[in-house]
Length: 114
Length: 117
Image (cartoon, rainbow over all chains, first blue to last red; front, side):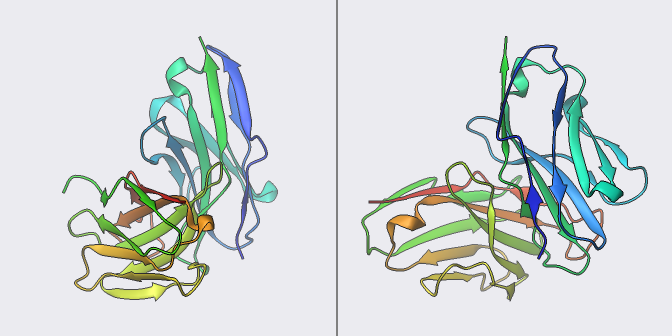
């Protein structure tokens, strides 16, 4: 069964610091990878996705993620965070032979201090 | 509608009561998913519908959980004889596509927060 690990549970950064959130998945087949964000009091929103092609994908609000197949990783990055990036971030995966539903990691709570 | 709508947003139930949670997906979306999100955890899959057909219910934690989507649009998640461990946010998501493709992206609702006393 596919699974997703997010090793950073709570990250605290100052504004303008660089961000990297780790995500590793366990499935060895063809995968689709996603990062979702949940701002305080709001619903889950898609940040970016990888389906095929260029392993470096760019999303909204200056976020990007790199798919490294050999490491089963899909880490999220942002060069300079803002206070408004305070939120919970979830990595998720689907596979071409597994269940259709997304499998989520446990999430990383990011707190950006002004 | 413009987004996925869920109701009620908040529900408090006494242990043993039955509850029903409603999801109104984006119009025309074929796929519909229910997830359960406990405090401090990521969403956990419950069940999946393609139109009115429930294709996967492997995530339902017990036979007290039941979901339906009789006309292929609105869906209801029912929990019978609620227990304290059922306390969670129940998320509904829909997507236009059914397959493993770049267009198959889930749009989530705001969720229904269930508290069982």
